[in-house]
Image 1 (spheres, rainbow, N blue to C red):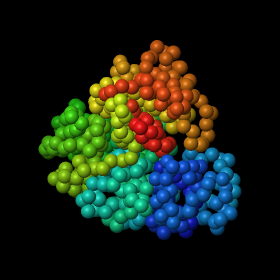
Image 2: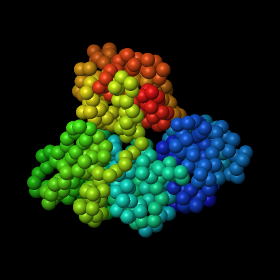
Image 3: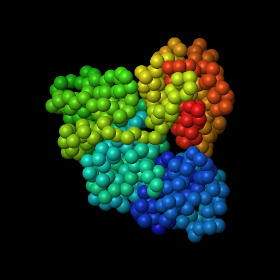
Image 4: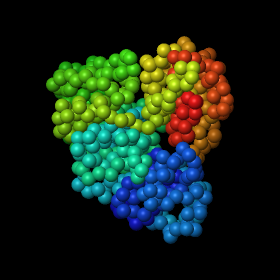
Length: 474
């Protein structure tokens, strides 16, 4: 079993997953160094500034770190790192570990803490941050590591995706995209949904089923996800459900929290949450727009209830969540009266959820501008994405593609965004556009948008999208 090393080097330290683990290991006393392709870029200052304040030394990703440093005990990498990466080339004699192994070692080091792992195809970061913030507001002082920047956790010494703490709870995000969630054995698990992002539904069911078997004490699971998995996968553990109230049998006998009602009017979104099995109802104002936010709230309440936290205390704290960076962030309104929002949405479920939220707020049309976060993910999801978009795009709405963002890793560089748009329009679909660059997009968006419209900027991995959204406003 791997112990906490004295020194580690992170390749791609400004990645959203890598950066949180780097901060956690630094907090645990490890000497942390790291490199990144864009170590001095403006969009990565959200990480590099607190890193340097913490004493984490940073290098260009060109193999130069060993000229200034004694060799680290381990090189930490992710699935996005190519085999011919310069840092790997100069450190061939240094042991290498995947980021999930590093996080697993850090979690095991925190002996005696109650671990809570949040996973699912969509919403992991928001729910992990939301649970962590509620626990913090209740005085529990949790340790938290998320795949996004939690606004209330950000400080001069923290990027916001890691929160140190001295309490009894450890809350972390478990990623299904590379099956690294199977590296963990948490006390409690939260399974938000099972969609088609990186694998077939059959493979995902197997992965999530195995993850549940690794959970020691209790599982909180969305009702439809439970229906897909089957009750036989959850044996000998506490079980609670959350989600939308549909045809749940009255004698189902489960605890949890479900969404009884949702409404959005006047720029305010509300939900009514119903506690099971008692049936007590609580109306709250949601801190984040969208029906998916109501579902996330029900997951947070269900998990905290399983932990023994009283409903009264919970309902006071849940509405005060400050949110996660790039989760339907309002970038501003331009001189034409067009509102611009920035979102991390990158899979089908997140894209559709984001667009539905925008449609509920817009007085005009929604123009969604999507930058795919890899050639592989685009190829895997594009047929299903077209089907979902055709069901949800309104007559005047527009869905536009930017070129695929390449962050490294093995790739055939196919399909491209341009090829995808040609495929969509070739099947008779309408309202799909390809922007060959951001500069072209800016010109076209000026012509396409008008007062009351909403422009959505969507895409993962690339922090510069947030800066670009603000540029469009001006």
